[in-house]
Image (cartoon, rainbow, N blue to C red; front, side, top):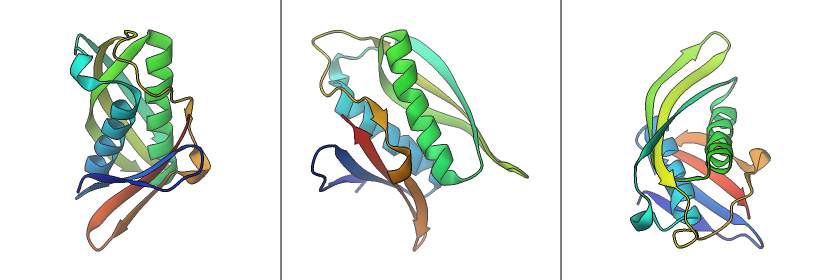
Length: 139
């Protein structure tokens, strides 16, 4: 199972899974994209670089997913895929470089309007050799 939705009264709460943090974060982004648009109607005509730094993996996940929402809104795009090109642990935390692909937002492709990623609910953790990223989307 790549992900699962959890009960929440008003917003979208889910967990994304992976063998590594990178894989779990790419899956978390995929779920975000699937909730935002019908991916069958999204063309991969644009690429956008995502660069982020954070002190913890929790923060890094929240910052990256928030960047994806902000880039979507600023550029008028729906995204289809996210690939982490590099993830490095530094003395001050973590640095991530990635690439997101998508195309122009169209009315027909739109689904749920995601306003933001809720930072206080976003958590990344490893258990039994499997990574989980829990995300709460404000809709």
